[in-house]
Length: 116
Image 1 (cartoon, rainbow, N blue to C red):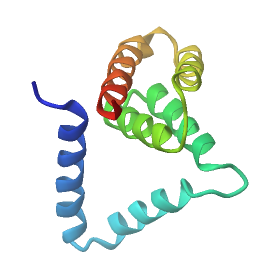
Image 2 (cartoon, rainbow, N blue to C red):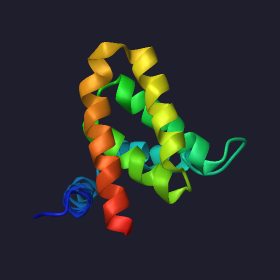
Image 3 (cartoon, rainbow, N blue to C red):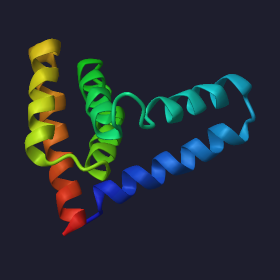
């Protein structure tokens, strides 16, 4: 059975490399801004990643949800924190977010299995 976490990360890395190889100044600046926005500042990295998770779920971006789930986990978020965050996202976004909530939960399980 294919590992969904590895597949997602391999595809993301491959396509990011291709996009950045185009040497488009605007795209490079957006990537840089994104990287810098999630660095520790007045808010710690875990909090910023959980905020990114809420925004991604509300905007219904499954790739973004996966990215922020993984980044949140790497920053030390546990299942309870992620579920509370996804609960807020569902409250803010409404029931249209529920399918993304399901996929987010499934991907979190995949992340936990990868760690084991």
